[in-house]
Image (cartoon, rainbow, N blue to C red; front, side):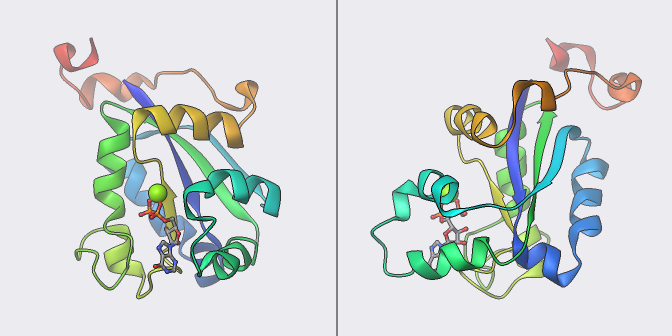
Length: 154
Ligand code: IDP
Ligand code: MG
């Protein structure tokens, strides 16, 4: 079992899509172990998007990510990183497959609704970046035995 980081970006909040997106994760069977609203700033975004800092679109990306508060979520489940990336879809909303979150809610390479960690290593780093340890709740819902079969929980 693993935990991944999702950010509901300003493009999700400003369009009023937050509820629909959270609903998708819950109905899939992912468990919300942490969730909060926060205003991002340049310092945390320079760290989070360090791999893009030299790209020409970076100043616009910063503005876009600071356009409103965001919602950060810690989602727990088996292979959660991979499952959430599949649900997220390709970076560019116009290329993302229908049925994915980006495919169903966006038309842009930048205004693409959510961030999701891309590897388990990055998920660990990113969860620490956005959450204090006490903001992630280490609980298992009683419904878990109807979400997985026993050997999947090992
Ligand atoms: P990812 O979000 O699918 O992991 P990354 O390449 O890590 O994609 O890029 C991070 C974010 O930077 C994207 O989600 C998007 O908001 C923005 N971005 C990436 N490539 C472009 C681009 O070519 N133009 C504008 N924004 C981009
Ligand atoms: Mg990425």
